[in-house]
Image (cartoon, rainbow, N blue to C red; front, top):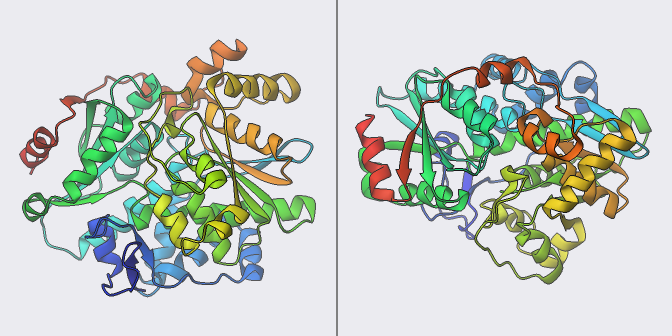
Length: 433
């Protein structure tokens, strides 16, 4: 399959999968998209989902990557990446939660990061001995998922940029305790500053001549596409439990990689009634969905910090998938935003009414689903224990901590502190070669 930039409207410059994987961002600054969107056979999807998520995901992965990766290798990669459950849990009347936090770092980003780590490892074996640097900016969960997904992958070093004081203690522990080929950078700035630093490096042709780099953020096609797989699995479970076929799907959204992966699934043939994107106070997309005016802004720090994004990179994919037709976009997607006070109220409601302990991001989703009286399922993106300070402060209960998180908290942190300065970051990365 060939890929094109979201900004290449005439489709003049085609790229291979390997080129997309190793570049991350297109040369014109756009995001890579497949030339055409493959169509999934929903009967086959349901048959395989009845066996396992991995069986279903292997089929879906082959639709995109089957031409480049041998079937046996791809199937093995998928089974290794997705070796954890993602159950659909009924919480209340018409409230079904697709729990995506049962992977090694307890966040939905394990799906994309582990798949990408395996794929880049395979593609890197076909390359020269030159070291590949994976750069990623994180507002919380991406960094830990990428660090875990790429830890000890031969020939690849990972540089993770995160904003000082704006990730939870547990999130920082997950990023800074692995060592080896993982290099955490604590930046004196916001997530948007971290993301800007990464983009500046990708757009620096001189730097890229001296250093082979790619991104592990959801801008990278290898991280983005596999996030579409669990929408199919959630649909199969919901259809099986309810007998219905066109759900409303509610998605906690920050950088909009997760939401646009859902749109991709829909265009692959997944039956969906509507998408509801749930943000925190960083509400540029919900506002756009009402006004038609997209106005990025400086990110605001909230208790749902993994969604603290004021200029979501994947917005380009959203408009691209709908040919920049606002009427089509606004008729398919609805938005809703929650302030910190409303997020805490949702956490309390879920616990007091149903005994369910929700993380702040998934609580944003619950608020949105309640507001729109959604009939379908919502994505739960992180384990509540990752935000235990917020949970304890809100409901007075300490959420149970998965063993993988306990181990991370017991280890010593190792990181490098840098200012928001692209030249200093360049020098640091070049020193690792």
